[in-house]
Image 1 (cartoon, rainbow, N blue to C red):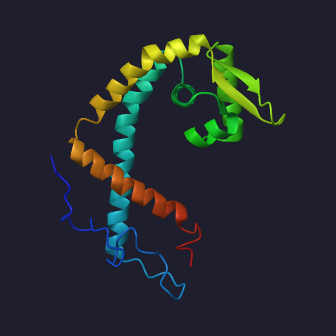
Image 2: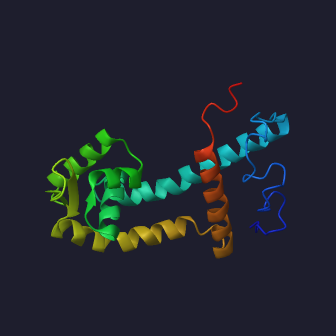
Length: 187
C-alpha cells in the first residue's frame, strides 16, 4: 500500500507552489494561466480514480442500506436526524446534498414508513422541522452501528494516517473547486 507523506510531490501546503491546489486559478491580473496537457491528463486520471473509488465504496453503503428497505437518500436523512436531532427540511437538504423537491419526497417516504414526523416551526409558519419518531430512532440505533462497521471495512485499504491525509487533501480540493468560477476554462 502506498503511503502519502509530506515529501510526496505536490503535497506541499505552500500556496506559492505552482500547481498546488491552494494556488489561485487566476493570476494577479485576473487571467487564467494556461493548463498544460500533462496537467489535463493528471486531472482526468485523478477524476477517474476518485469516481471508481467512490463507486466501489458506495456499493457497500448502498447494499447495507437497501437490504433494510430504505434508499441511500432516506438513510442519509435518518442519519442526519439521528445525530443532530430535529432539523428544518432545508437543513437536511443542504446536509445530504439533494434538491428541495428531493427532500420533500424523501421525508414523505420516511413519514409513510413511520420513521419521521413533521413539526411546524413555532417561530416561522413557513418552516417545517423533521424529527425521528420512536420507531425511526430504534431503527437507527439498530442499523447505524452495523452500517458504520461496513463502511470501515470497505475503506480498510488505507491506513489511519493515509485516511487522514486523504481527508485533508480531498477537503482542500473540494473547497478549491467550490470557490472556482464555473466559467473558468471557457475562454
